[in-house]
Image 1 (cartoon, rainbow, N blue to C red):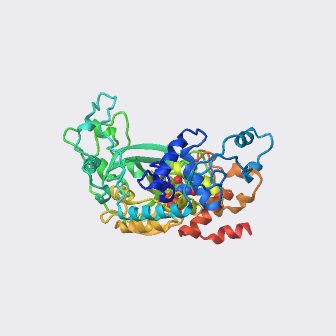
Image 2: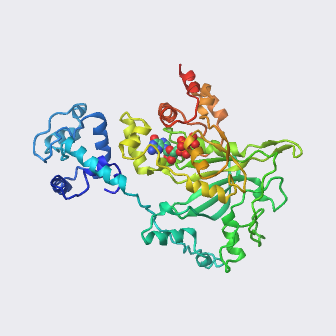
Image 3: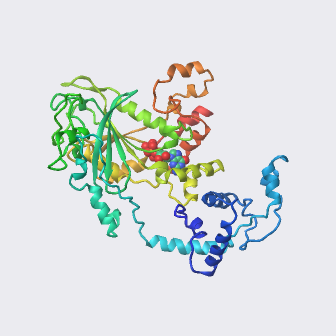
Length: 479
Ligand SMILES: Nc1nc2c(ncn2[C@@H]2O[C@H](COP(=O)(O)OP(=O)(O)OP(=O)(O)O)[C@@H](O)[C@H]2O)c(=O)[nH]1
């Protein structure tokens, strides 16, 4: 039951020594014999029960498993008479909740909460191994001979019982490559770190990466850790393979990049646009319109890629530049499984914040220390590097970066496309949509996310999470 974070929910499952818990444990072992019960769904069922009164399974609220015939619940009576599942359910021995009376459960909850508050949550790092064997003969697994990576050190610290919450976040860009997108070429940087085992990414938009040093008007956005030399026996080929080269990679490329000092930007060039984006499988991969995440990712890359107007003495336009820091913090840090459950709670009538709380999480479980470390590595926002313009509506992100001593010079709002183009919202003609659709836009279906689920989600973000979006835009649209 490690998945259940909520003390309310988990207290039901944790085997403790008090008599009530023993009673629960006994009930649990009996329960295992009943295949119709799916323990993995329990958090959801309990959460729904807490929120909306009584469910079929918990209507009895008895502390003991009993045998009794099931009353015709409203839920069952809603089924059609030919619903064989319903008929079977009626014949079956009734399942009666084995949870204790609410008073006792609340007692346990209070105790568990008290204990939890005093204890520090250990980091659940899954030690990655850096012994990738590359099939190419030139690599000959030399990467594994490199000096210990920050994460190796953290892993060994962890194995000695230290908590990684105390360690300073260190990141290393493990590899960089060029990715052509509908908005132009971006440079994907993959990062490892000493805080978690996830592969966070930086999507760098910067055509100056193509230029060799000194050629471009603005300095290229370079990863310090990528350009640094990892060990004495690292060859040029090793370095090129992981993306440490300057200019265009071509069959004749033989020279790797050299570590460079981060140079400051020309005062007439606007500061780079940066977005810190959290993973959203549903929004980005299957085009969910419950949220605007897919659209935001696409819009961020599009905005960053827009040409920038510069004043004299440079004058004219230069290609857009900046980066999206893509954090693997699915579901505002609660993970995909819990996010799916949260969606079901939302369908049961709760908003995105309440759903998280009901599952025992905070409204937002994310942290931005790794993002800050990646930005520093790219020379963005740090003392020595450039200040940044941050694309967000989320005040937490601005505060988190400032707390990390990064220079957020400006916040640039991310207005949902459906708010900006309300006419397309009400338009029923497919014609108009086809004209405006951008081929190859990253999400399935492209264009914009919209619909009642999204409206509710955005409204909650403004009203309950303090997101800085003008609700008047959307209110005007629907009235
Ligand atoms: N728990 C939960 N997570 C959601 C839900 N909808 C979207 N998400 C997650 O919310 C996160 C969205 O994060 P970001 O794109 O960084 O945006 P944001 O925090 O809303 O702030 P902005 O910068 O203003 O966009 C992603 O991790 C999504 O997976 C939901 O209903 N419940």
